[in-house]
Every structure is written in C-alpha cells, then in structure tokens.
Length: 255
Image (cartoon, rainbow, N blue to C red; front, side, top):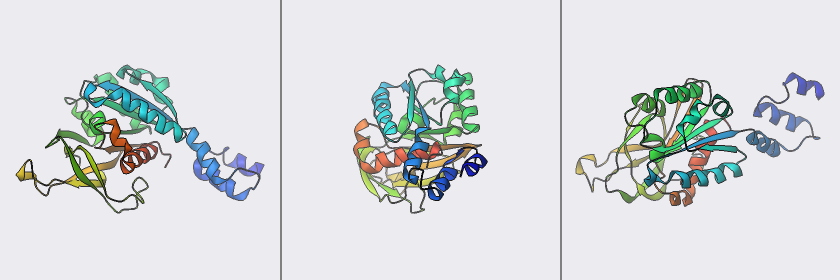
C-alpha cells in the first residue's frame, strides 16, 4: 500500500484517493476522503458594486454555504485583490458579486489569466453578468450580459434540462419569484436550465426561451452562471441554492 501511495504522488486528485479508500480498509471511507478533498478547495469572493443587489449579504450567505461544503473562503470588497497573485493563486474558484461598476484592464487581465490557467469562475444574477457593462471582454469570459427584466419581480418557472449534468442531476423544474432576466447569451454556452417568457409585459417576446443556468469553458478554466439571485432570500428556494452551490463546486473542479 505504501508503494501504491508513493506511485500516486500521495493522492494528487480525488480519483486516486477514492481508489485507495476502496482498496485499503485502514483508510477512512470514500465519503470522508471526498470531504477531505473538498477541504482543500479555496474560494475567493469579491463583492461590491451596486448596493441594490446586497453584495455583502450575499457574500456572507455564500461564505456559510461554502464553508459547510468544506471550502475555505477568502473575501474582499476591492477588485484590487485580483492583482494579489498570492490570493488569486490560492483560489480554486473566484466568485464575483459585483453588479455594474467598472474594472481596469489590469484587473481584468489578472482575472482572465487566472481562469485560463484553471481557476474556476462562478456567480449569479447581476453580481456576475451585469458587471462592468462597458467591458465586452468580460462578457466574453462570462458568456452573457443582462439586458432587461420585464415586469421586475415576478413569479416564473425554471425548466431544468434533462441532460444528467452533475449540477442539475435530480433537480426538477421549480418556481421562483425574482427578476426574470432577459439576456444576451453566448451560443457556445452549455445551457442547463431555461425560462420561457409569457409576453404579458412585452408581447413580442412571448414564447422566448431564455437560458437561466449555463456552464462554459475558458481554456483550462470552468465558468458557471445562474441568473437567479436578486435578493438573498431567493437562496431559500432549495433548487436555487443547490444549483448555485453545485455550480460553484463544479467550477472549482470539486464536483
């Protein structure tokens, strides 16, 4: 067994750890090893921008969620944290909670290069895809940009696509009361959930099927987005919270 451990480089990934759990009864169960693997994950939350989206409250809520999932969490209320190579380099996933505002080219380049090198990028609602409206390269990275929310806060249905993706597996369609985001969306995204506009506010968009949850790749990095999350209370909806939590884990390559 010692030789096997050495050959594996002392568990360089979850797959190797799970094999050893299966082969050797002196080790903890595979479940405990998976938890240990998650504890090696590190999230960097960057919150700020428009206060209408309660960035600090969302950061606090997500810190609790990720801590319960075995992550260590670092947070900052300044985009300059992106220029701190040590803090960015330690992150398995970066979570922007920063509606509108502006980002410098230096800050964006640091973010883009981190994702390209394998750091995940994950977020929700305007905190990720209504940020830095003038920076089209950022929109290229995230895969979409908010355009409108006809009717403002209103009930709508989220249709979960049945593709057995680990982010949505086992989650059924659900109702939510939030801003139903109408977005410009990159066609290269992998869409995991959608919503259909009824046309009550704008008849010309009746029947439009709009992506709500998607993933995409950026070189070696994974990107996750959900358009739900105008108010912190929306995370009380089980489907909303679980999709967001799993999406962050997926972006961090922990799912």
